[in-house]
Length: 291
Image 1 (cartoon, rainbow, N blue to C red):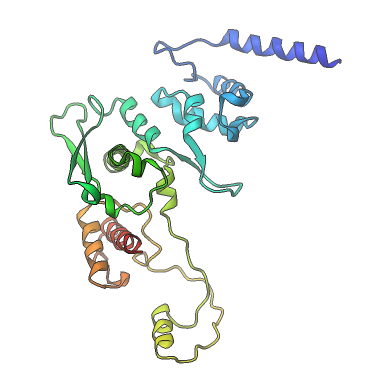
Image 2: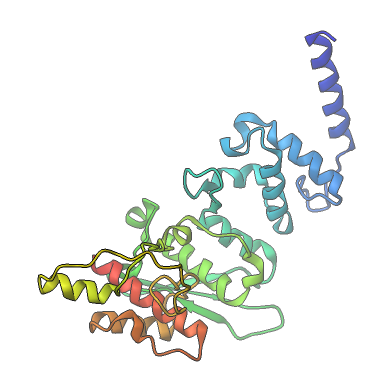
């Protein structure tokens, strides 16, 4: 078959696929009703070239995933594609979403009457944001307070300097969804969230890190590290704070503990894992802010 005939056949197939597409009542093209529709839409999106971000071009699987994420909220995945990033250069790195998209999901979902609302307290580095929202059937606003600007250590967007109020709104809106409607954002993380996960130190040691610091301070010779089998650390250790909620009472106590020089092992919430995670997040956040 000649190249011209192949191209003509390809065009005919695409025309037939487009002819079969129908728009939903809301006018949204990318809200598939069947698995076949989802697959066809993913294939078309993958062939959209410069209309989608490069990580989705010729990648129907990635397009399918993005369409599936956007569909419940009526968001256009072609537009959303430009608001996503690979978290790193690794081939299997997760996709990170801009906080703008996450807030758009919350407002478009219909779970918040009239959308999220914001107000601010303080000035300069003491500036903070309060996000509030009304759930259907309730007149009691649910609120989330952000940390002060100085306590937010991961700031990947240049808008943190150019328009901090906007970034605080995105930050707090995301936190509101994580606290009150976590089922909406399963597997959806923004760039800052993925950037704040600390690296796990798997270097084998025959003595504890504290013992090594003491030995170095005293000028003592350190023994060769003994290769030990990997062990799972206690969940209150330094690496276990992913998912901490900034601004919670436990978070603030963790900040205070770090400022007072208390070690991370002094986490007082052994009986409450959520509070312990928040405390550890505040402890580490204060440490990063002091660097």
